[in-house]
Image (cartoon, rainbow, N blue to C red):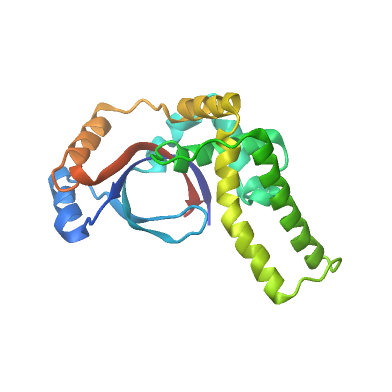
Amino acid sequence: MIFFCGIQYEIYLDGPVDFYNDILPIWIEVREKIKFEPVNDIFTGEKVKNMTKLIVLEESKLHKRFKKNLYADTYLKCHYPSLSYCESEIKDLERIKFYDVKNYNLFVKNNKNLPNPFTPDEFHILKNKLDGLTKKLDNHKNNVEFVNEHQYTEIINEMYTLMPIYKLQRIIYQPNYFEEIKSIEKSLTEIELMQNEQDLINKIINHPNIKNFIHSHGIYFVEGYY
């Protein structure tokens, strides 16, 4: 398997969109086989109810243009699996920053229900709580501190609840840092599209089958294997 990382143009749909009745006629009309996929929660991996997406321009079509960006090499290095695929492996500030750039693009940028930013004290209380839970699991793993099955489940569930809050607040709680993240993301995703690509996008987003179900559309980060 080969790892890929970059950007692609996606249309997110929020509503009861049916492949045969709604998407297939669009394929026929635009003469393009557009990928139609469920949307999974980036933290849990579970399908988000009534949310689907169309992948209009795949990563391979935009890769060369993406690579020309000033930040592209750093972004790719920070997301290569051997370096930072897992949150626990991210150590230095640069990798954390570009990890936050990806998360901003995927679940903050078009979030219409963002919570209020934490105060610095609130954020550090949350971080210390997560650090404490992580330490307990590490101690258990290394036979330093025994955690029974019930306690282990409670710790995992609490981390499962707190981690998405932490990742979001890490991006938004400091105004200057938040603006820096937005600026880097904007630079990485401002890709000049060819006229035929823009025409294709316009035909799809204005199609009556899905027009009223569009939640958001644009350039999104993507990574995976093929």
